[in-house]
Image (cartoon, rainbow, N blue to C red):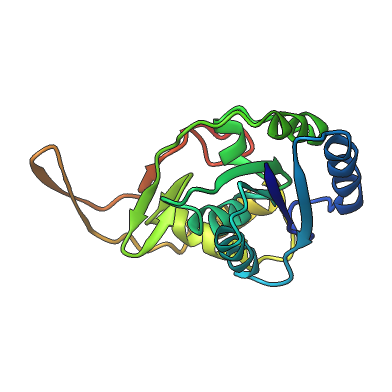
Length: 204
């Protein structure tokens, strides 16, 4: 099988790029069944571009080493394609990985990927955009957008931004249509959850 590893060097609180690169080489150099390449994303959207190229090059598995943002970029390029997805959790929250019981230990995750076991997952779509973990619309969306451009990672900055935005949040009305009924709500938090948590063990 042919693998492409896309490493986001800016993911997470720590950036163990060399450590992860060395483990990939250690695990895959000893395998005669696989070929692989390691590349590094350089800007927002780059991981998606690299994954799209991999599909056209008939790569069997694209592996993202990063957080939930990197997961979204790479997976968006692979929906309904013949290329599979693998993940080395490297983010600050790793909600997607935790929900799917993907090992947070780098070596364990890479060893699992090398075994090549494939399963299907559900995908959400909003307009022409896909999501794979959770999609927020109310205060949770505001906090997520702020966190995305914040200089620091981890749970503390997330809670700091949440508290800050909570006191100035203006409630919006939403119409929800499901199970043959329509309801109108003004929620503090409104999330479509494809996985069981936001990240850092914050279970929905």
